[in-house]
Image 1 (spheres, rainbow, N blue to C red):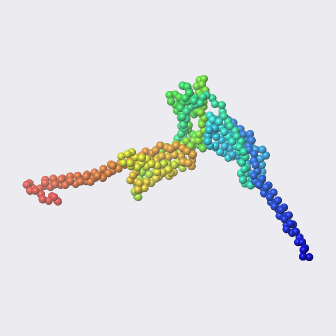
Image 2 (image 1 turned 135 degrees about the vertical axis):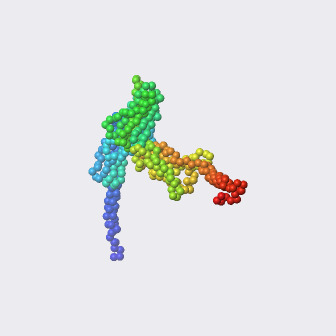
Image 3 (image 1 turned 135 degrees about the horizontal axis):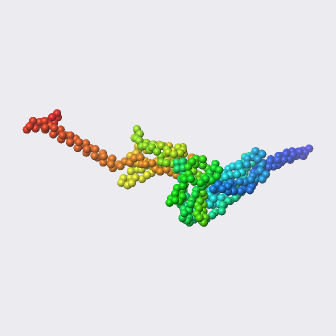
Length: 391
C-alpha cells in the first residue's frame, strides 16, 4: 500500500505545451516570411530621345505578379546621371514614365527599383534589385569644334544671357545658333536675339522665361559651315540656380539716439522675389596709413544692420550685396556691391580738432586789436586812453 505509484500527470501536461509551442513557432515563421516578402524589379527599362535637346523619356513596366490589393503600396525609385558625375539625381514616383534632362554629349545612365510597403510587409519598406539602362546619341564632329566657355546668368529673374566662344577647330565664317526647350513648349525654339561680334553669333538673350523657372531648361548651341561637321553643345539649366540680382538700392547710414550706426537698404529692382534674397554686409576698418581691409560681418535676409557704439569709431566704410538664398535655390551669383556709403579719414578729424582752438585764438586777437584801434580814434589828441571798457 505504501508503494502505490502516482499517475504521470506532468507528462500529460507536456503534450499541450509542446503543441502550443509548435503553433507559435509556425506562426512566427509564417509572419516573418510574410513581413519580408521579396519584390521583383521593374521590367523592360527603356530610354528614348523625343528630340527635345537632352530631355529624355525614361519608361519601364511593373514587375511580374505584383500585388497591390492587400493594402500594399508600390512605388519606384529612379536615379539618373550623366557618365562622369559623382552624384545621382533621385525621383520617387508611382508612374511608369518620366522625362528628365541630360547632357547629350555624355552617356545617360539610369537605374530603377521597386519599393513595396504596407500590410503585406508589416509596414516595412521592401526594395528590389536595381534595373539599369544607358543611352548615348551619335555625336558628330570633333570635340575641339564644340563651342567653349559657355556661360549663362539669369539677370534679376527677368532675362537669361548666355555667351560662348568658338571651338578651337571651328573654321572662319561659322554660323552659331542656340535652341532651347522646357516643359510646356510644343517644340524647340531658336533664339531671336543674338549677341554678335564681327558678325558672328557669340551669345543670346532670352526673355519671358518665367514659365521655365524651377524646371529643366534644355539648351543646344550648334554651328554650321559648308562641308564641315561641328560638335553641338548640350546643357540642362535651372534658372533659379543661375540668378544674379542687381545691387541693393537706397543704402542709407544714420546715427541712432544710442550713437549706433544704423545701415538700411532696399531690395534690388527687377523681378527677384524679395523673400528669396540674402545679403552680405562688409565693414572696412581703419588701418592707419595702410589701405582699409574689408571684413564680412553678416549674412542675413533682413535689410538692416546695426553697428555697435564700441565698433563705430573704427569703421570707415560699409557696403552690401545680395544673392538668392538657399530657400529658393541651391546656388546663385552675388550681385555687385553697393557704392561705398561713406568714408571718413581719422587724420582729417584730428587735424580739425587741432585747428579749431587756433582759429578761435586768432579770431579773439583780431577782435581785441580792432577794439583798441577804435578806442584810439575816439580819444582826445595827445591823451592816451587808460580804459578799454566802453571806450
